[in-house]
Image 1 (cartoon, rainbow, N blue to C red):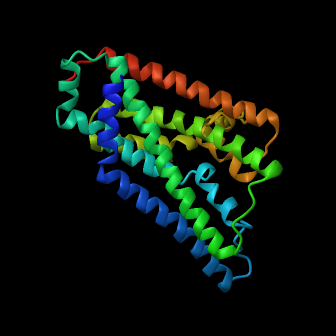
Image 2: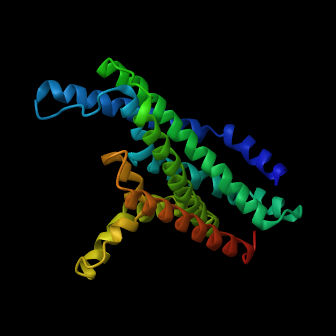
Image 3: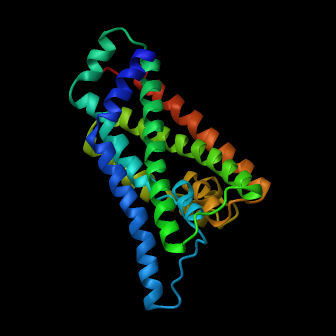
Length: 256
């Protein structure tokens, strides 16, 4: 397992696509802040709603903007081994398919957290420059922020697991990226809304959407305990189910 992780981490941090995605994600965070600032000069209705750099930077965890970059990078990173035949070589060396899959998942999580970290730093700096305040990480705010970050890391691990599962099943870069971006990141939330319409809103399916629970903390950092517990359970369920499906599919498939 350690040999697999070392190999995957070596590939990860030598991957140009990781740094390109991180750069664009960081610039998006900065650009969004300055666009709102510029808009506030044009119209009084447009207001930068964050009081300091820290509160804006934390949006990297719960804003959902990072999901597109996660989908793009994980699709490229995982399918590359099938495209260039290195996955076949890895399997032929006798490594367990379960360990291979888990190594890819762990590496994808690290990549996702790296993208979030870059966006957080970009948001912290740009938000501080705009508001003139860094923010204070003390008291109840610190406790709520740490809890939020912990839950968001779980939810983003679950999303990473979904993206890896799709990549390990489809194994084609273009097809994987299309499914991950269109079906999961873009269209996925709409499916929950359609289910609610089908059941005449008797069941609130959107409450169990992974992206909905990610962005739950964007509206309020300390939601009711019921919502907090639900978001944790949603993250665990998505993580366990997609890991199980992905590992089972990979174990029962031929690597060419």
